[in-house]
Length: 306
Image (cartoon, rainbow, N blue to C red; front, side, top):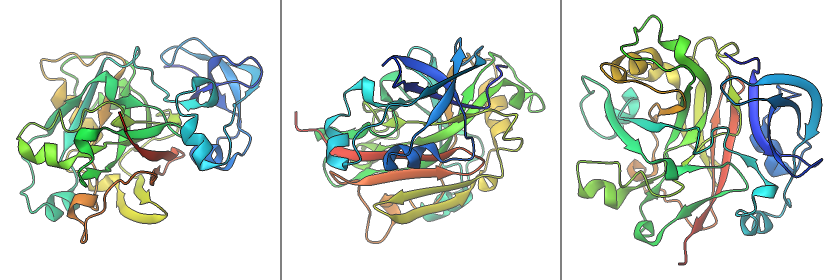
């Protein structure tokens, strides 16, 4: 595994190019700092996320305007961002687990599943943290666009028929993710991939934290915060199928390639089941906050006008 512990992908002030970097100050919440305009510095990483080596060369992350409206207007400018730690080219597949927290199954009034429930997202769903926005297309602008705070696992070493005992040896790192969902489309069919696979429906980041830092991924707090209000407040210990089980089960007869992304399920509190329901509205601020040094994934919501 590579030498970094807290990896970001970003555009540097010094040369306006995209780089990989190891955070200089690993105690900071980079997601919040990027919103607040706090200076972020990183040691340059040579290589890829899979084999990168940390150098002593320090670069500064470019920042956007602190004005939220300006940030939304600049969302398409890749010279103004901290980016997803995994690119679409590096991502081989996005595998997602449904109904994987006990309290979420209870709020849905559904029995606990006997095996992991799998759905997938296309690579076009992968999206960046702030100042990138969650772009809600017209087909989902019906008052049912929803959030799901999730721990994201990135596979770093390919494998097939992986044992539970060795499962975490295949993990490259952990980050935050938001399984953005179009509920009307989801409830229309028993297959969820379309309703959860719209373009930009899988923002992840901003920091990819190595397993050398997170020894036990089943002891992490996980929250969703919408417009300043905490709407989900759980812990990864409450997963029905833990990370080891997910990797072992889903690698049966199936090669998990390096770059595979796992979205590992969401705790109770999704907007669809709240009373009254909570909806991702145009201009809203949705944050996924995870412990263990992962920090906060921040995105504004923007309704597509095209």
